Image 1 (cartoon, one colour):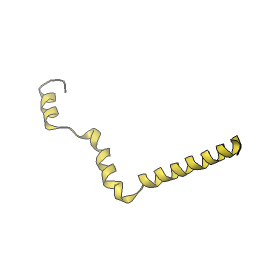
Image 2 (cartoon, rainbow, N blue to C red):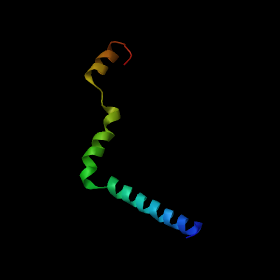
Image 3 (cartoon, rainbow, N blue to C red):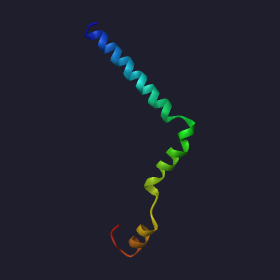
Length: 58
């Protein structure tokens, strides 16, 4: 086995890993988790809203 064979095997492994991650990310059963995570930047706690109204830093 020379270095080119090792490079080919590594390339195929990385491609398989990439395809696996894409399939995992697009799986329908994870959609609810991703939707919830997408809304996290917009979520505020009640304490943060109250302190922002009073002029305090969060």
